[in-house]
Image (tube, rainbow over all chains, first blue to last red; front, side, top):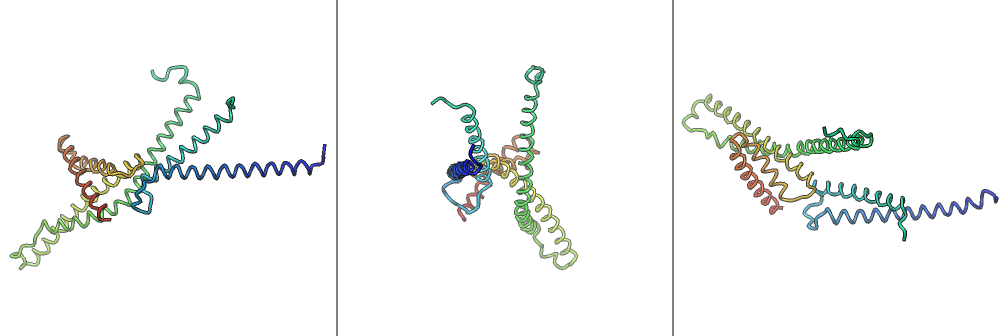
Length: 84
Length: 161
């Protein structure tokens, strides 16, 4: 067995790579979530600067549903790998 | 009778029902709290409008007659009458504004849309609540009338902006 340094350096690279990918994934998900909920909930005619109460509750519900869908799809993909 | 099936005895099912009930209660509580908070904020607007309209209508109701101006006591009595009437109509208008804004809050929060139908439904609820004593026909008439009135006011305000 080699010394503790060489595999831990390789492991460190792997971990850093995974964290980078995770960060990119999260940023991408945030951007998509924002785009989707904005285009769905906020009307095109901007009559005032503040969000209405209706738009506010629409965005709440949109974000909550998007998050649930993400978790559910992740679970379904993680549990049983579909045969490609 | 409904809960005697074997499935309904399992702890998982009971937990599911308990969670659904809690979610439902939390939603109702949230709607009530939010509508109370926002109604208090909007009620000040309704109360201000009610006070102004009450004073205006009170002044209209009691025109000071000229042949009674000689006695100062008569003047003071007239002023007191005007004040009382304006205060009572101010209270009525404040209650109306409160009910209207609460109904509009709840409807818009539930629908998650900013439409004119929120105003229509809120106007109908307010008109129906006010003229509920006259029976179902008066309730319908009050609902339709107040809904139309509030739609006109809303369109006027939108065009003004």
